[in-house]
Amino acid sequence: MGFRLYTYWRSSASFRVRIALNVKGLEYATVPKHLLRGGGEQRRMDYLELNPQGLVPGLEHDGTFLSQSFAICEYLEEIRPEPRLLPGSAVDRARIRAMVLSVACDIHPLNNLRVLQYLGRELAQDDEAVNRWARHWIASGFEALEKSIGRHSADGRHCYGAGVTLADVFLLPQVFNARRVQTDLGPFPRIVAVAEHLLALPAFAAARPEAQPDAE
Ligand SMILES: N[C@@H](CCC(=O)N[C@@H](CS)C(=O)NCC(=O)O)C(=O)O
Picture (spheres, rainbow, N blue to C red):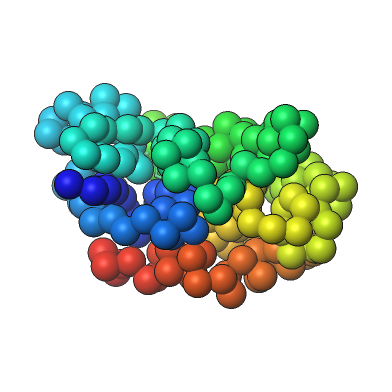
């Protein structure tokens, strides 16, 4: 049956899994879930039965459904170890995971759709205030990531060492999010340089939102 990815073109968490699948050369079919149409297809009963969190991405592999982009990427790493996204020693891998988690746990959740919708709808904040919130938390997370890249990148083109790791897989989609809410990336030249390099790689370029079949 192979891989089926429940995805939305603009979803940065889905973008991560698309990159990981591409890097590992795994072909997959897509099941688009429109996050806005009709209140959000990710909140419909049929999808909630698969993923009670009502979030994308979800990955079906041979009939088994998995959720959470980080868990999915680690699963792919275990079933298809090469090329490695978590290379090196235990210390290397812990540092790469730390970069991943700074995006997945500390930056992205604060600019996720349902959080921004809550600010707008429940707390009556206008679009500018909502975008300001997103920019604030992205910039705050990027300040630390910029320093980590300075410490750990060996070539200025990757977050860690001199090759693609899971840290790159998580960084690029967050840069897309940052640009969407007009975050000033001037203070983050290392992040911008890494993102520029990654976008030139076929596995990353093919995963970008505009290249998806459900792109609007
Ligand atoms: N921690 C989750 C986050 C998943 C997530 O928040 N996905 C967003 C799209 S990027 C979503 O489905 N949002 C729908 C909503 O907020 O209702 C992961 O890494 O998979």
